[in-house]
Image (cartoon, rainbow, N blue to C red; front, top):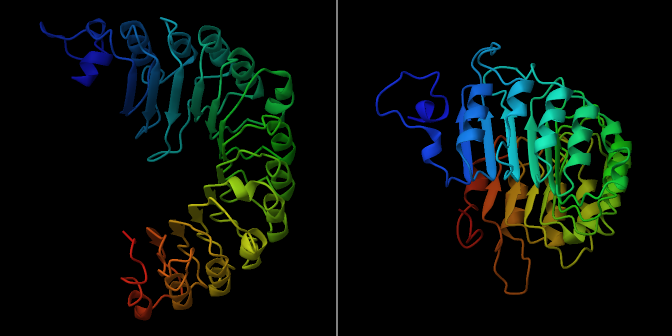
Length: 362
């Protein structure tokens, strides 16, 4: 039924075949398909008259052909009725390392001409789009508050070089697996001082200088730094301002961090709003770091420390004894504790994973 609805020319014809125009009231469409095609995008854009949200994600099992792929022509068909505010086009690499190889800067230029009212855009897997294409979006869509790019293999610092000259008020920025970005890009990006969500996972060229820039964001709530080349000392840039506003922090896979990172961030800190903390896959993080976290009484409700080889039973016991307020209840905030594949966990730890030590653990 979905195939007939969205791509009638590819499906068997039947006398009672539905046509997209009978669904003019749909405003939000989210689809996961094998492959996003020009035909699919064109049919959706022309048939759904009231569409404001379009979210398409594919995960090809084999490299798409020109007939079964998205091209520049398909992007030109987006938003034919001019009502689109939120657009997401993502090519997943779940089954195959593949990209939108038939889309380049021209495609984004043609799309931007028709999408000036966009408020959020997510683009994943556009390997031939360069800074010129991405800048077209930034300079054409003055209402944009959410920008998400993943696997932007040609995205460099130049895309944010003159962002301060635009009227953008970005609140949510995600730049995952954008390996060419350096600290300089983040320095320019934070001219949008109202950013609340910043996701820089696997941007491996970013380091301590980027943290200095991030440390100036007064309203930051969610920060994901997975896989970045940062040090314990670099994290001190977050302590003065950002750590007080954060509700979610991920340092997963930051290999240079040690136990000292915990004290740098949390020692003598008070009135923190942090609820989610991910310290997974940090080789040098040990029980001493978790003891420091417990002593700081940070009110986290979700703590992930999986795949840390030096974490053992002592960490679980420390968390079980942790008190974050004065009601004398132990471990009273943790709803989720992820200790998968921690090297020092034995049967002893499991004796503590129950009431009264973790009364809220799911």
